[in-house]
Image 1: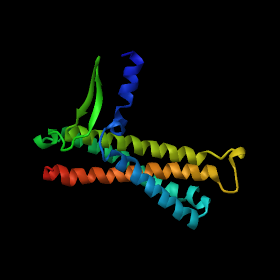
Image 2: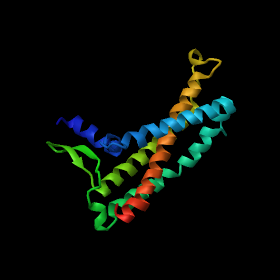
Image 3: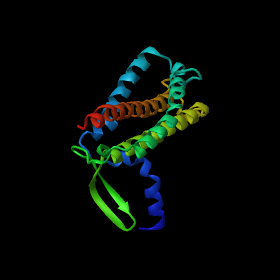
Image 4: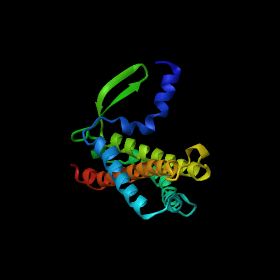
Length: 190
């Protein structure tokens, strides 16, 4: 493996949760967030002006204020999971998701995950997702729409809001799933 391939591999490990192979992955990662985004957009388009959503005290700004507090808590959760000292957390999961891993010159395909590995990948992704959402919202707040993209329907702003909501709903869905897994599946050993 070339030096830059190794670097790229290492830097993408925090989002390796998205590369897990599992039947329910698409549902939690994309289908539920996409459905909630569509529902949210229908409500917002029918009830609000775009300025009320993207303005300084609009929906995007208020949701970003909520998300700003998450990375610290998620990093603390990562540390807790990494140091959690119960044998159950190092057991292979029931219907374990699998992932391809590169270790030096060795490539391992379809490696089943332990509960700890799954939770570490999930909370690493949630941390990156929340940081990306904050940066995306802040850049969107200071960027004005170029005149060639302006339209009476505010298409560029609605695209910005759509992407923001998709990432927000993905973050919230996976956060709820992670809390369910920690509270019930891990605790009850199922």
